[in-house]
Figure 1 (cartoon, helix red, strand yellow):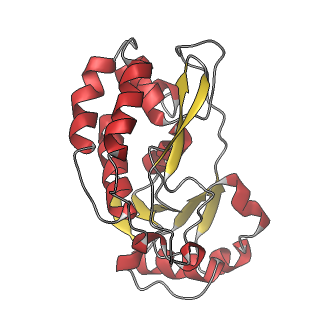
Figure 2 (figure 1 turned 90 degrees about the horizontal axis):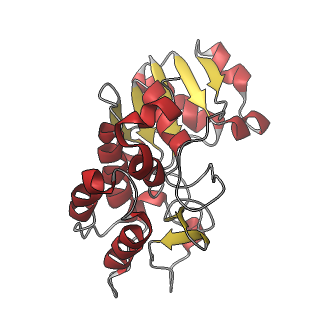
Figure 3 (figure 1 turned 60 degrees about the horizontal axis):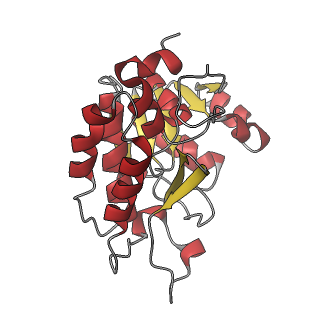
Amino acid sequence: MNCVILQPSYIPWRGFFDQVHKADVFVFYDCVQYDDRGWRNRNQIKTPSGLQWLSIPVHSRGVQVEKTAVKDIRIVWDGPWNKKHLRALQANYCKSKYFTRYWHLLEKLYERRDEFLGDFTCHLIEVLARELGIAHTRFVRSSTLPASGAKTDRLLSILSHLGATHYISGPSAKSYLEVNKLSAAGISIEFMNYDYPAYPQLYGSFEPQVSVIDLLFNVGPDSPKYIWDR
């Protein structure tokens, strides 16, 4: 059984969904420490003037964010950040080929007023995965599983609990993952190779690592051809 364990991210890039597609079970790794400089609450879209960050505001005042688990990070609802993100998407992608195909879906998704960041991003990822045609993958959250230990030991406890036989990881994990522990438990490992073809984009030179929303708006149902179906 193939398993991927990744922290939930906001409208992630196509490489994230490649891992979702490879997994029989995809684990949102939400029981680990939040990284306020990562991709948990932000991502980039393409605009006529270059890349633009879309960031979900989260509570940080009086909270030691870097010591808080991903699942416990709360969204700030003092202002209409969701409407601002929708306006940015509409302004920059209204001329894309498949804008109307996905626009109403995104409007509905951004109507959610989740208290916790993880609830919003996990739901968004699952919906986008289905739009990409991924129907076989089961999603679970690590906070609902008996995860214990640190680093490789924690991953191993999740994999063993789920009965995984094959673990798929990003290439950066090569520097710290204790592969021997997985091998001893009878779990094989595969490291991702993010080698994807360019696809038609708006606004000049190709940008490979923007949000998957860019891919959907520009190539629509052909999106899998630029991720795994090639």
